Length: 341
Image 1: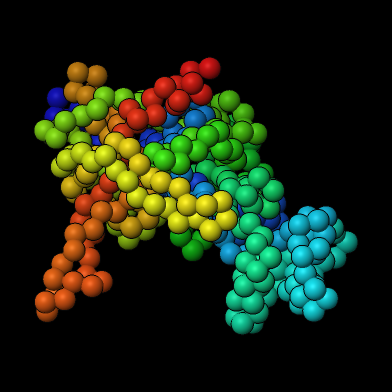
Image 2: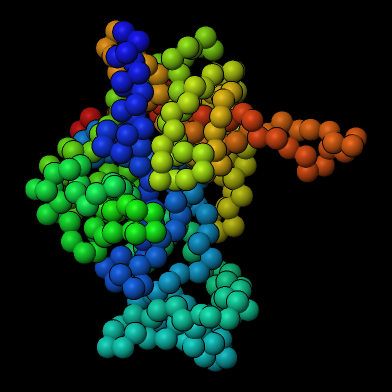
């Protein structure tokens, strides 16, 4: 039985069998020399093309964008600028040759900050969810392998083109991009549900997945783990023991300039165990020995600090050794509404 468990543990970290991925927002995906990745977040597949992650990154502001359709510029930005501001903006975002699109051409750091200030001044919404809705960027699942085959299957690799499949020599990996769309963001619970789109069913079926466990667990679990990126790289994967250390009826304010602040609230696990910064969206999994499988039970949401006194001073002295996780149980009905259709 122990060997069975070990095999399943290793499968969770192997590139061919792990359900852990990343979602990144891509601008200019189909133009290799202009392609740009941002807003990197952990995510995992729960089957049938549904992906879970956190929601708080959706409301973060991107500050600037790498390109914008000229029609959008003329509608959403141009009317709010004076003559000098228009000249400055258009010098930083000139029209692409033969295209109805403006591309960022900012080399001066001062101009970069000036564009950020200008967009804020006219209250232009650069939150990722808005840039996604305006199709300035599109979220994609990032899937990477040591070779150039999608799960070692040539017939699946043919479904990708030069825009969605390319070598990255710097990390000795081959990257495949799978487009996703947001189904629903559960902001209070800090969980977001995505769905794979524009992708053949056989490609979706090849992606490893986790079954969901909606049980509200107690603090005596011995088979509880966090599946996250490896400590020094987002390319590798790490499975480490985690312990439910307590429960909280959580309340925190998420500061949001454009749409107004909202609350992160509701039932949460207090988790003791290693987690790396950048692990938001990682799944907490529990091993079921009777079925010989791991199931996802919660999603990593926030870091939880302990305040330290150093030289009799407390200000600014925090050590982040605990985590706050959102149990899937708190969104069960709403999640099943989408995934069981």
